Length: 215
Image (cartoon, rainbow, N blue to C red):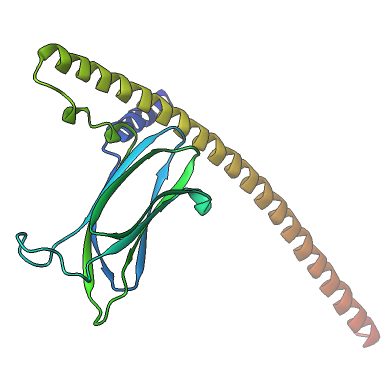
């Protein structure tokens, strides 16, 4: 039991230390929308960057048809966290105010003839949203301060994520207990129904045979 618990703790730590990054490329057709979701817990910092991949040589500008509308929404779309129209590239950042699934939706502008856009999207949250390397200067003291600050933010983020996972575990345990209880009652009711049907069939056959004077 202790070995299983130690293994579970090690797995959780490895999970928290693994990059919580959503980086991808995908295609969107003209006039169509594609949404990406990310499970983020409250008080987590999250940043996102996106751009349309140039189908031509990098020295040529993007075609006029290659524009997108971007919307980043909170769980259940109650709050618009980022909104931009006719974009070729952009970024967003926010601190999650609640636990849940957040959405980033990309809509390609309507164009005739239809074209296909390739979007490069990088979404980071928690520990990996704090890229302190970009603000580090050449001074050794400032580099040490930046490293300590990054380490402190990492510890705080891991602690918050562990607490969040603990809460989710408690919710899952409660759901399992509730499900097991309901299944037990369902099994009991099924048994009662089966016995009732069997009793009714026995009574019906007995009555039938008595009427036929077979017994």
